[in-house]
Amino acid sequence: MVLRVARRGLGSAAEAEDIAQEVFFRVFRHAKSLQDPERLRSFVYSVTIRALQTELRRRKLTAWLHFEEPQALSGLGWRSVDMETRELLQRFHVLLERLAPRERLVFVLRRMESMTVEEIAAAMELSESTVKRSMARASTRLSRWIAADPLLAGLYREEGSRP
Amino acid sequence: MTTRPDPSDSAALDKLTKLYRDGTEESSSAEMDRGLDAILGRVAAGRPHGRAKLRWSLLAAAAVLAVVVAVPATSTLRARWFAPAPPLLAYEIAGGQVLEGGYLRESGRAGVSLDFNDGSKVALEPGTRGRIREVERAGARVAIEHGRASFQITPRAGRRWLVDVGPFLVTVKGTVFTVAWEPLTEQFELRLERGRVTVSGPVSAGEITLRAGQRLAVNLAKAETTITEDVSGGTNDDSAKARAPEPSRSAATPASAADDAAADKGPFASPSPSPGKRGGERRWSDELAHGQWDQILSEAERSGIEATLGTASSEDLLALADAARYRRRPELARSALLAERRRFPSSPRSLEAIYLLGRVEESRPGGFGDAIGWYDRYLARAPNGAFAGEALGRKLTLTDELFGPARARPLADEYLRRFPSGSYAGSARALLSVQ
Image (cartoon, rainbow over all chains, first blue to last red):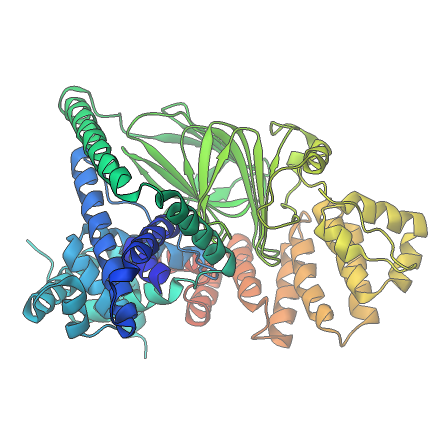
């Protein structure tokens, strides 16, 4: 679960492994303080999300300091993805990289992890309305960027126009 | 003016999100074990002086962070404002032309080469299918969809080169290397002569960094990844001219003396002992999997080609045909495939043989028409077969080559309808976009 969320959140299998190690290291260190074993799953989730937030912010800062372009999708272990699909995913990943860390994480948790707004709000220590606003902003921006990308927009319009 | 999203953009967002979500593989047990070992190691190491160590670590980290942030920030600011931007990257093409969508078309039979103005060179071997995806100030991205290509990249700060090889992505750090991808057998190979590259894609260990002199071989069908020290070095040896990469042994094993010895024999030599004959039966599929093509061919010749074609098992006949194809002996490959069809007409390999006969005919001068005939037969017999996409894609390419785009467009349309994400979809779209 941790690796999957980290992979989807970061777009890199190698970085996701680092995050997962960090998460479990923290979980082990703080396991004693966990009084209700029922809450282990949500505890692990919240540690994962905090680690991801930190990593995404660090990336943004590094990219800003180095004037770097968004990171390339560096391998998520796509087993059966052909070159065309890979290009689409690469372009989509670049768009995800452009989102603010909070928006991106909210989007990934909501749309890829299917978490509820309440769960996201609890895990990220945000109000539900902030989560909803972040989600709406992320979706609007992504849709706008997709529309501006000739390959992404063109391909899906073409598909959508078919009977 | 800003672009307004419309409903189709939301649909695109939904589809892309689903694609991204579904594309993420679950972790393998090896990854889990590796991660668990690392965590247990850290926990064990951190136990004795945990708190004091943590405090010192935090102080040290803060100091390092200050340096890390300050130094690159000042240097990049300086570089950004005072250093000239790298010149625009441009290239000259020889031996072919660039089609719509960046696809490279070979004009002769000597391969296509690209000479970039920064001194970088890319050479596609004859028959290799490649594409220039991007060329810009920040770098270039080239895709190899089938075959073999050599790269000699001149390193330059702020410039990045990416090479897509089948489902793999090679990130180049300034280097000389050769890549090969055989989509039919799902085999990837990279031989790094100089410099450093990282490879990502469907490999068991995630991203792999290679150093000079190493060779990475991946057999996706068998889920095998091997890194060996390529002591044969260079790209000028005979074996490097072979067309397809070979599968290799264990998963992500460290290079061993046996591997080195095998590498001495050439990039497609087996790192493990030959299985040869077992219990008096031929097992050419094993030898084929270990790259021992010459051994298969010489065994067949020792037994007599006619006798072999009349007595070999169905599996061995296909292995013989593959060995002959890889060693560019189309006559023998054709004979083996026809024997397969004649002797085992109802076996599934007989269907595969029809498709492979098309590939054999393609490699023969003037054989495109016959190749199309075989692909038609395959598509008629197995419209949803394992090679249907490849057969239709090859037919599309050859029809365009032989009869021009007007005849090829209906095939492009059919291809996109049936295989919208297939490996020929880019060519098909390019063909349809030029009316």
